[in-house]
Length: 447
Image 1 (cartoon, rainbow, N blue to C red):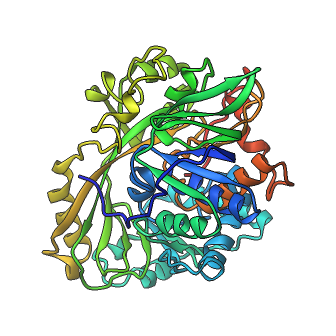
Image 2: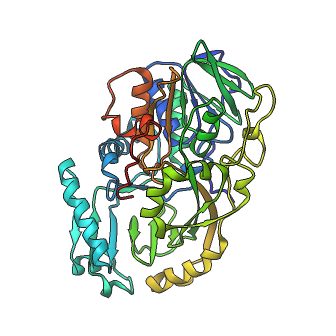
Image 3: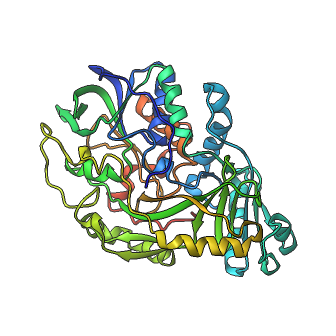
């Protein structure tokens, strides 16, 4: 079951040639298109389904610096600036508000890890607050378990945006600047001539382009493998749901040991029940298991393993060197938008726990449930940068479950790199080569 997403107008025909072709209509690709079009270059976005149909509409909507991996903090600071300024600059509504995020805990080990993070983040001029037990209780009024808190965090400058609105609104703004958006237009592969990218081959024909940015989420590794390019990538199946409108118990995002919720603009809550994500054993997962092992060890309590239909079909299944002159898996109707079956069994216990935690929310009903397919890298940090072995090809993928909030900054960085401009932040933490040149895989930091 797909979450709601605002519709985006498509351009009726492919141009013959552009400066930049972008594969993928999620927030990272769409925001890159916005900045490329703003710079006066010709850019087209090719999306096999609809803009924001996959993870860009299936996330929590949190826009946070708190608990980010240190490598991501400079880029996330830029993203927060863009979340503030883009709506007025582009005349759009992305639903962004700096509500602050609250974390509360009864675990001394967890609290200590937060203290260490805050001490590190001060070097980036991030001044979030460690909460005493009394302050944590004051920040979680109405929570029945607040008496057990030993402390927490308040990140006053963090906030939330609306996943159903954000990427579609930025896409509309990009079109007004001259970008073209092509939905239900799958890219079958890269057009390579003379050892460099010359464009893309789509189901509607070939589009010539001086550069190609692949922002294909869970599909990126499969498409690259078709061209002999290795991208270690794996995916986690997740389930979240939203409730009907209910009484306000928190203005933004709230993490507790029992339940994680975020207040939506419509008055409901997005509920990320404390169930573990599922790593489905797949041919691609087996291929990259060694590279992912350090992260699996570090995050073993956050995931469970299983075998599902993704072993045989989808972005991690076995695929050969398909032909470009006939329909591909990208064009199959059940693959246009990845819509994994959610784990409905979590809903009743999650709502029960929500009611126990907040008696004011007892009896609130689920409004919509959906699954997600979270594309991840071995170190849980995205890849944003050039593929040196194939000039003209750039990547923006592997956001590892926290790409929505960082999306505007990631789009700006990718746009800078594609256009050869000075990058908005140091791109070296996101370089593609770190995953394939034999360098030790760095364990992920905070998520």
